Image (cartoon, rainbow, N blue to C red):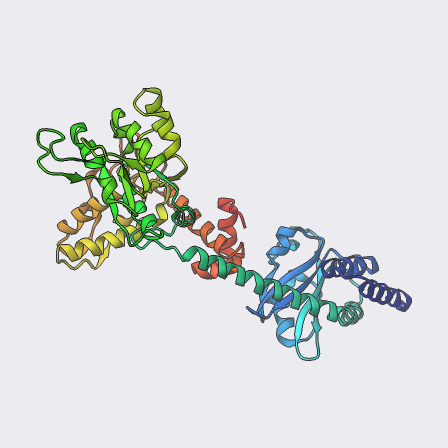
Length: 503
C-alpha cells in the first residue's frame, strides 16, 4: 500500500503547526502526537543536547510519565541514543529484547510484555547533532522499519530549527539559573561564621537568618539546649554586624549571685554599698556602641528584669547609688535553654520582657539533628586537642566514628569536645579507637536518651540527609548528584526510591 499521501499529510501538518506556534514546548509535544497519529507508537521522545555540560536530556515525551522522562538522561556514546549523537546516523532496533545496548533508562519498556521495535534518528543543524527523535513501536513481523525511519528523518529535518531554538532557549535559561544560584551563593556565603562548624542544611538555613539579622540592631534571642554553643552564635552575629569593631561583652546570668549581678550589669557609685570603695562601670556601660550577650537570661532575678526592660526600651539606666542617667547604645543578644513561657506561668519571668526579647528568635539545633556535621566537628576537635596535647593523631578508627555518629549527644557539642579531648589523651598509637570513647557510648543507654533504632537505621538516616543535601545542591539532577557522591546512577535511583527523596 502506498503511504505517500499520508506521509505528505504528516509533513504538511507538522510544518503548518510549527509555522504558527510560538510555544516551543507545545510544538515538540504536538509533533510527537502527530507522529503517533500517522502510525501508532507506544512511546516517543525528543532529546536535546545541552552543550554546557554535554548532557543529553529528554525535553518532550509521549506515552510516558514526567518522572520516567526525567530519567532519560544520556551522554554521547551512551546507549543507542548516545550513539546517534556520537555518529550522526539513525539506529533501527528490530527487537529491543535482543539489543544489549538498549538501556531503557526511562523504565517504560521493561514493564511491557509485548516485543517492541525502536528507532532513533538524529536532529541536525549544518554543523552538529543537536537532538534526537526516538519512537518505540509494537513489533510487527512484516513492518518496514527502514521506510518508517526515512519518514522520521524527514520529520527531524522539519523540526530541526524549532529544536535548535529550544536548545538555545534551554541553555540561556540554565545560564541565567546558574548566574542566579551563583549570586545567591555569594549572598549567603558572604556570611560564613568562622567560629562555627557546620555544613548541614539546617545550619545553612540558620546562617542565612543570622546574616539577615546581623545587619540590623534588632534584639536576638538564641534558644537551644545546653552545650550547643550559643555564645559562638552570638559572637558570629556581632562580628558580622556594623558593631564588629566595638565591644562584645558577655555575662552569664546563672553564674553570678543575685547580690552581685545588678552591680555587674549596671555598675555602682562609690559608697553605694559597704564594699563599694570605688566607682565601677557596669557591663551595659562598657558595651556602649557594641553588643552585650546575656547568657542564661532565664536565670535573671525577677527584681532586675524591670530595670533591664528599661534598658531594652529606653537605652538608659543609672548606676547603683547614682542619680545621673546614662545613655547606652547597645545591641542585646540573649540566650537560654529554659522554657521562658513556662517561667512566665510560674511567675519567674516578666511577660513584657519576654515579648521585648523575642523579636527575632533563633533556634540552635541540637547535635542529634545535624549528624552530618559530626565528622567535621570530630576532625576539628582532634586537630585542636592534638595540638594542645602536643600529640600526633593520624586517624579516627571507623568503629569509633560509627559510635559517635550513632550516639545521641545529650550534652551536644560541649560533650563531643570533652569526648575527643579524653580520646586524644588516651590514644597511644596515633589513632582514636572506639575503646577510647566513654563507656556510655559503647552500649545502649537505658535512660531513653540514646538515638532510637539500630546502627543501620541511624546510618541510613545520615545517608538520606547527605543525598538529599546533594540533590538540593544540584537542583534535583540525579546524574550530577550521583557523580558528586561517587556512586552509579542506578544506585542513586535506588536510594531515591528507598528514602523517598524529593528531586
